Length: 283
Image (cartoon, rainbow, N blue to C red; front, top):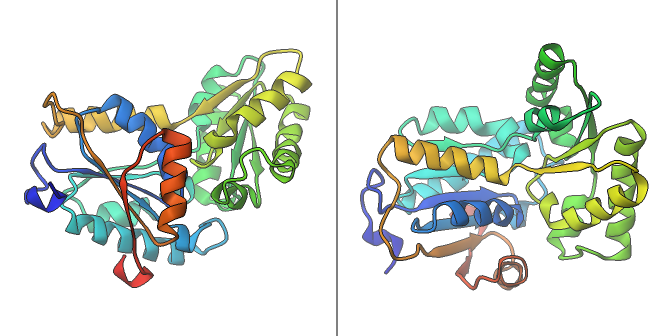
């Protein structure tokens, strides 16, 4: 049964939309599906326009609103912006455009990184766009002022591209991850937040470097679980969580290569949803 069979986006039967500039959406989808197993999910990977990190806020906002408009045609009851860069640049515009929708964004993990830090220094791995955003800087300043925890932001130029190519443990990716993790460890960070939804897919590399280089345990924070909890809370508050016993379905769209996204679902989540390729003009 297609999602068009659910005409009322207010109803619990309506699907949840999740999107990212690429396969980062899958790391959040995993947590959402685990927490809301009966809900239907529409995943949108804007891989034809990835990465967002090098784009202006205006360009990112245009893409976010176009994707949201497409998801609205699928009668979604909620939209998860599974991208730190898009959240920083465009979530305010998205909420203004669709005040009736539940909209959940992704924060770069600064707050939990500060909470778990034992020695007063927390690291955040993120795109250059996220690190340079006024939203991120303001968040770090608030956390430091209220807790005294120093936040060390590390831009990871090129890492999203490597993950999009499926090179999760290639020599080039290993060297890149080491180049970005080491300054955090050398700076004294004892927690590292994954401030991009692509990065959980290279968490094993990050963890291995931390265990090799640090004599103390380093806490690595994936913010996807927090996003899923917030989405669940909002759906329950508005009476929109699907509570039927049968499992929800997953449907996917991409502005990139459908076969590549299909492989990513199989490799990363052991799922085989229907994937449809779209032209940019369609979303």
